[in-house]
Length: 313
Ligand code: PMV
Image (cartoon, rainbow, N blue to C red; front, top):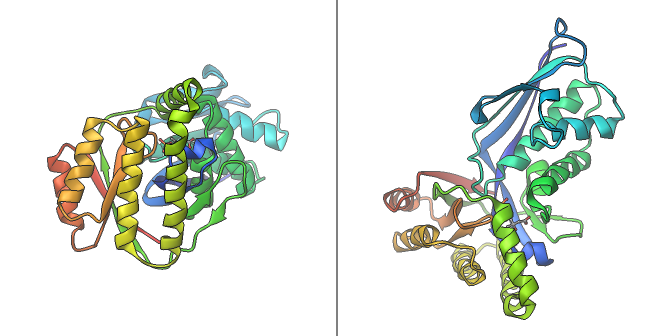
């Protein structure tokens, strides 16, 4: 059997992270310059059922049965098997690579799950539907995030801009005109689960101190949707910056992200905010194409370990 390869993009959350966990809407878009990729090849001479996993980016080279069933590189395989009602997988080797920075809010975990589930199910001759793939990535996320909203697996599997409200069918966004975003990586690895958990503890201790901020973020996401479906990037920038201020209020920013946001604004960005779980990871800046390089350079001078320019829409 020839090799099967599948891939999945990274993502950024434009508006609404954290509040989305509490039922507010959020907007996310795929970032196709970065990808997770999984290739499956049959190894007919290997012992029956031996599945080898090679993920050089994170130093994993192992067989499936040596990994815990809940390991992020094992769980998607077990979930595909379960979904298809298959007891054993024919001997094969999986190679997983990714250019998506880990633990930085670009959805690397969900993208790896999606690429793996697609490649394995196709290799087995029963490609899963997009909905099934998305729900496998969600279940993997649940194991590691605790209470994920589902926005990451949805935007990455469907590979489209989405307007997402937890527990409701997501809506595909048709962006009227493309725009440019510079993504700045703070270089600080920040597991989303830790920050989401901290917000949850604060919410449980005093819902009324957090609720107004969550509602304000939801309102920003709804306003942004209207702008995205018309065309007014200037206004969109102001909403991004306002969303960042609300995330600061929630306590999920950090000095490094705030410096990057300020540097972007001082160098001509139309708006900027942290993106994803916060406390590290990435920030995003809305820019005109002409200002993109200036903003990216300013971010690197201010400590960003890398920048990425992406066209959305
Ligand atoms: O995976 P990240 O770091 O992009 O963050 C996900 C966004 C949160 O709203 C913080 C969590 C969630 O599950 O929606």
